Length: 314
Image (cartoon, rainbow, N blue to C red; front, side, top):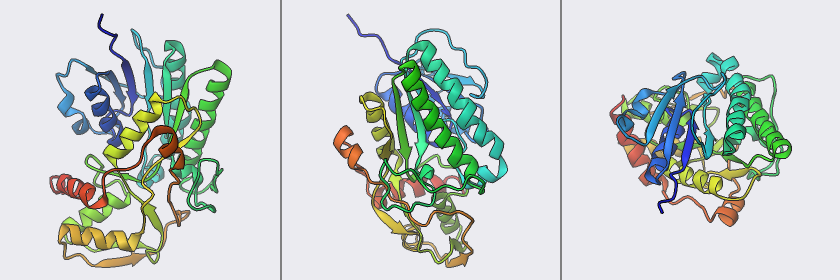
């Protein structure tokens, strides 16, 4: 007898990560119901799924009540603006999707008796005083700074997810996502990869903030999504970092992009934005041990694919 096809709901399905997750789930035999209200998502990211019998799209704001007919096995809550430009432009919507949106998505999972995963973030660590960041670090976050709307929304989302786990015995998972890059990122979203690559491809000056000594660690999107999938299928309900621990300074990263794009761009320095984290590097011991996961795609290969994508957009 054929086993029943799993049904996954993905909020933020037209976003950068949500659309890649949707592709992976479809490739692994899931039926996917994608939701998005296109505040920051793009129909271009899911155009290729038109006519796929296993994909259904619902245009909806997840902060409103979610009603879906039929069984649901997994709820993946990825809806959220995720770039500094968004936080400044739509701080209230950012907070609402992290709080009310998480509440509605958890309500759906509870009603359907589905397993739930929330896409949290390394931003919950704020400007960390511990390096690298392990899951038991509580963070150093400014509640009232310009990034507070995102950081606190995600911290609340984690707390609410744990409350549902404890009070309603809901099967929940929490992934803390570190810097990720790849095709389908928005060109003008203010994050470092699209910013540097688009500047390099158009031979404009590459803007490095501060002295460029602040660090990030970049994970290619296919690696990240694989780690998240493994977490959902595991039995672990506490937060897990998923990211690439290969740390580099912004100056090193800018040089790598100039080389990879063969750009004539020069580097220019601008003042450091408020509350910009000085260091960011995941400790992925937990992911390695529990999920048998670690990044496979090196930066040169990942950037090749990402640059090829951005060439079609600039």
